[in-house]
Length: 191
Image (tube, rainbow, N blue to C red; front, top):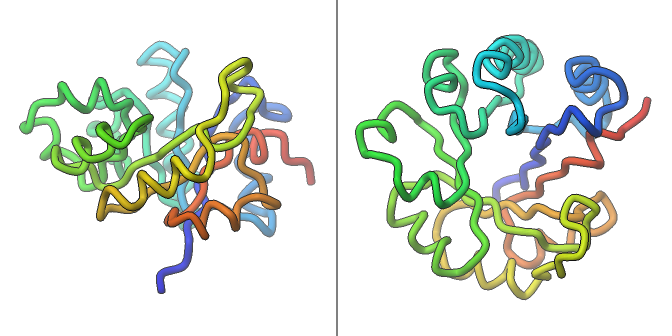
């Protein structure tokens, strides 16, 4: 059985200090992630590219995969390990663009989106939000039954996101997830 993966999803607004400094701390911790998804979706593309170059280098120095979010040209130009997209963007992505990436991750919020993402060539899926989270205030979590349903629908890895911490991570793996994604837990981590 393959080891479950731990994914750090970034949000510089939650970081203790600069995002780069926070990633350095995270990589020194006992909970070092396998993958970093650089999800700074409120940045302009040129600013994002500048940050991506630094983060990709830091990830490579620490043997951590770096997947960029949303900015497909930046991911292709910088040699990132992959791209992660919302389902709506991935659904419109031309085949010619898909061929530029070895890894394409897709965020889904339903069984139908999961099935379509797999059919359209996604490498993995992130499903959420599973538990209550401050990032989705006022929106009810989808829960472990939803996660299990998504995992049962597809044959590609599914990673759980939303309100996940080290205490409830095991329940996500038991529901069929190949691993978990954490944002706040990593961004607010102190050493």
